[in-house]
Length: 77
Image (cartoon, rainbow, N blue to C red; front, side):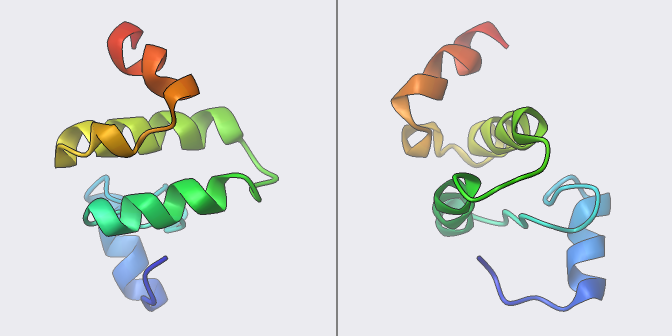
């Protein structure tokens, strides 16, 4: 994921481009790919993170990056 300082991460969080704590900043499709790869190592609220990543993929026009097993959430959620 992006190498950002905490101020940048918090700014992105207030813009809805990172999780509320500044983790998982997703500014573009490359950040999205990195975040999806890191998803498997997440020990916190994976449902909230997955929803955030889907939302960002839609906003960025990168829904093709979303794993197939998540695709139903794009169309239902």
